[in-house]
Length: 95
Image (spheres, rainbow, N blue to C red):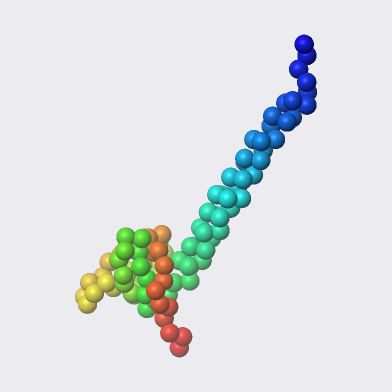
């Protein structure tokens, strides 16, 4: 008995469908989120109020190449990686 060549083709269609589903429902949204987060980090300026992924609230007082220095209380400043910023609470007022 010889194998039917069409059987192999129909066997691979579910695999291709599964890979496409992974791309559109997992990888593509994740890439969009990373791009959005990169844009957020690049747009941060002095006096923006931010929250880190660790839940620390503070105000950006200095922007460095790979880090931010944020003020979390009077006379309390911490340096965090740029990737540690989760979101912006309030952007600085335009002058």
